[in-house]
Length: 105
Image (cartoon, rainbow, N blue to C red):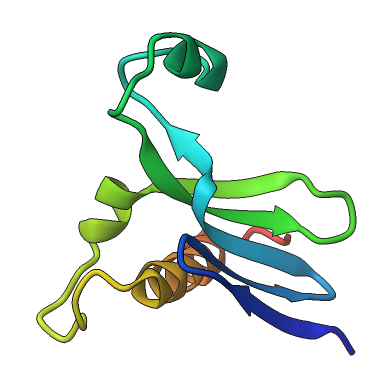
C-alpha cells in the first residue's frame, strides 16, 4: 500500500494509491495573467501558491485552491502560516466537498 509524504522548504505533499495532494510553489495561480508563461515574461510577483488534489492513476486534476482560498477556511486553532496547515486544510476541503456532493472520485 502506497502512503508517502514529502516536503521541502517550499512545498509539501502526500500520495497514496488513489490521490496525490500537493501544496507549494510548483503550482501557482495569478489573477492578473492568464498563463504562468505570461507571469514569467512580465516578472509578475502576484502569483499565489496552490493546493492541488489529483487522481493518482490518471493524474487528472480534481481540485485546485489558491492560498487565499485556503485561508478562508482558517480557524483560531490554525497554527500560523505553515505549509502543513495549507496541505491539511486542502485535503479536508477536498474530502468534504466530494462527500457533500456524493461524487465518486
